[in-house]
Length: 544
Image 1 (cartoon, rainbow, N blue to C red):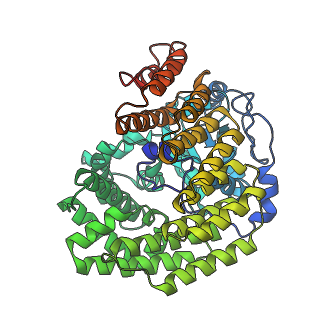
Image 2: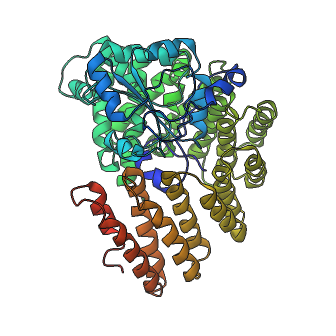
Image 3: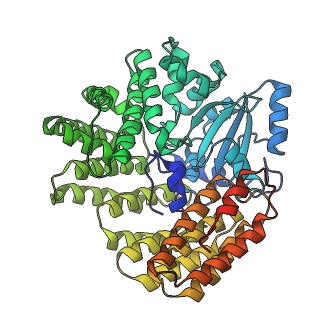
């Protein structure tokens, strides 16, 4: 599925089946190691879910509650892995990080918990810890306070050292960040932890982006010059540019804060070695940042473009990153070029040809079923971003037969087929993807994609839409199934159905009534004190 911008992931996950899209860690030896990495040890943290936990790490066997009880008795923090069997980047993390002896050794200092998103109770735990994107690693103290959050996308050699950073200071991360904003000094350990933390994976609502930017900017100023200050300034710039873009959708506003952060980003890019180290963080800068730079100063925009392109090219050739990661840097470069281009300006043909050649070489070389999925995702991102849908179609179609979770690529292929104008094929693929999906959370995720597709591409087929939606909504009928990820999707589906009906001047009212009634049958089983109850009750309320 189409990859997502990292900021705002908590909201956008509802719109797609994609897992987190970071650059991928390096492992040229991944094919040899990945077989062991992907072997299932059977049920772990949840007790009776199928988790596909890789061997080597002593994953805790028992419930999450028991894991925290063990943490209290041993004094060890908990290392929670949150993933999904279909998630390409989860496979990459398993095949490149979880097999490393240094990382395995470091996990012995934690209570490591492997939690698949379809394990019983997993979604409720994900909501409790504010974890939405797959994959995410969270370090928590025995009292369940978050210490550090990591995703895929770092140099694999960094993961063990980052865990060291967490072990050095178990102060909750949400108490560290405000220190600088309050004018208090930060020590070296605090700066390192803030800089390594994956802020883009936090469940932050758009209205809080500006506040988060201010805190990260203050933290950057409180840390010494170097990678820590650079990363924090880049994250601050990303939050601030997106905040200002959302506040001014019809124009471009460049505040004094964003201008200052742009200058910091430019200064980082002016130092090639520092910029290369910050390349994974630089990837979070999206069109809102580059368009604001162009509005502020054409000269600054050109300077940023040239330095950013040079940095991404260097990262795309760096042996510190796997090929999927390298393709991710190429995609970031292409998106920056398109964001900074004049209206109707096309990308140079040579740039696209070079990217296509890298894609072809990468796909020809990598056959591992555990490393390849992340690589395919990175390739599809480039092709879809540059409107090369025919080539993307062929790649996605070929992966369906290769994959152990073909429904993932069926949804990918459906999205591409729709863009090519093949609506019947797209609907058939979404239908097949939903009915082929496994696990309650995954089935609801893919089911909402199917319903959304029907509303867009077959809006007059009331009976088909009603039958499909009744089946998909039935996936929520069970314990802890309307947690954060499902709630966001349910809210989005509510909006889409209302829009569908209002666009037809109420002609689909009977369908909405039937769907409202079905969800109410689920709602009455949920205790009124649970957050899920209000979301459930609000579904098509009054619209039906």
